[in-house]
Length: 173
Image 1 (cartoon, helix red, strand yellow):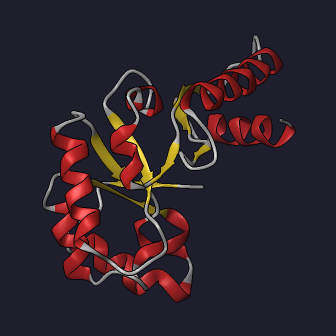
Image 2: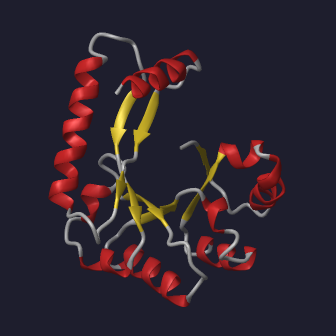
């Protein structure tokens, strides 16, 4: 909690007005109602702690582990960023398969969700640039971590993602 308050103060000094809190959700290990209860409790404690301070507004969200079982969850919209249909997804650390593309298409079409792939740079050892572009062509939003641009070992790949126009959001962890 102390670390969260510290980060919010740093963000306020940087003139950041709004942040999205994205605790990790794994449908294999957790269920939506339980996750939402824990998230609400944490946000409540944080809100109480910073009450009266001029700090960025916090929008609840989640970083959701991408699995085909997401299609079976009836209340996926509760995992979205605030009251939007944007859902932040964390891809599995495994080789690309058409199942990823097919499941993303189903999330977009049948669930009316707009997926955001978090930390796209983390998947470059499993996915080619062409495969990432194929995912992006579905209208999927890609988020790149600012650390990937700063870090010398990942900078070249991060800049290539930016040059290819597949990244729409730069964020942090």
